Image (cartoon, rainbow, N blue to C red; front, side, top):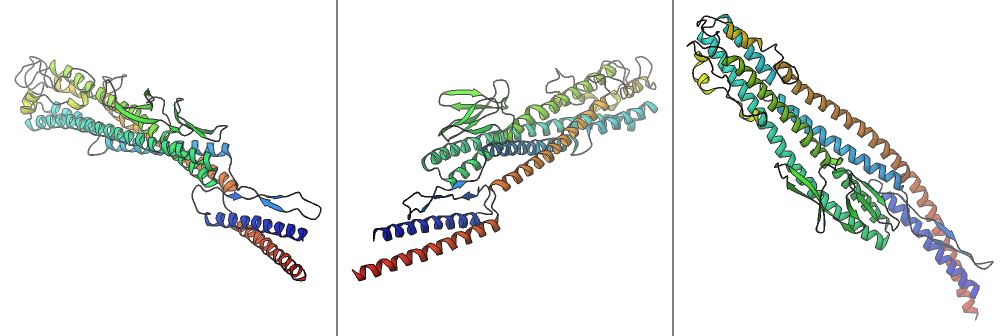
Length: 454
């Protein structure tokens, strides 16, 4: 009877093991379309026993994944999110600097055309009025672009603040996931941890690794530790000491560390790069262009005379410096009110002289802008430089998408669910379970007969 009881125990263990296989295969099929799900596998282990009694048992489900590949996928996700965010920011910048009416270089071209018309007829009030109106339109256009760039800067600061807040929340979730994995070692919990780590990489770049204790450690590009086991730091923002631009700090307890320059990946890094790079450069170059326009035109204008013979008048309101020039450039108020003050003649030459107008028109081809460029060339460079950045950013998105697709294919080959394979496994385990059920039923009948005979 003891042998029959042993066989009954063997059959029960076999049924349990095969049913575990059925459950794992069914779970895999059910999660075939679940994003981030890693296929699970159950290993059956033969048990040693007496010559006639052994058995089988199932181990804990194995999660089919590779830590190195997972790390590369997270890095690729951070690069792609960063490329997309930077591309969007630069495309928006390109629209702001070149859209919304005539471009600055077009307005400069129009002004030089009107000055050329004045040189052909210095006393024509219509031509003078048109030239003054063009100068006013140029100044207004530059101020409008400056306002648009300042708006882009402010909107980017808002995104930076939002990204930092979202990263803090994800860091807390990652720390909680570490605690859950340590407590349960559940494959689903590890899948969740990988998903959270990937989302965190999309926000801040950085890198994550699994330490010897099985917990994930997340480190920012500059070396700051955002998540260490079940402990999470925070990303906080504050205005700079000399600028309203938000700075990013890594806060751990009472320790605060400025990581603004250290975050180079993810959406947060892209927004920081756009604000402190592309947008800041565009604002500085627009200020320089406004200053060069004001300085060069005023130099010529003050040296010549209006129809009243007076000299020394400026064409644009003088600027105190380069910084902020684009936001304050404006046509001289007296000239704007009276186009007769447009200095088109050499001093003492009389109102019919056109040498002052010719000198103003000659600025079109003069290398008076910073870097030895013409004013129109400098204005055109401002637009084309941003356009080149937009093209490069778009190419980066395409490249990172290809890398991401390749890595996703590698992950699918390792951890993805093959429906046909799982259905085959399901049938195999079900058949084995049915066989073990018949085996247990047979042993049970033998035990019943034996008891009846006793």
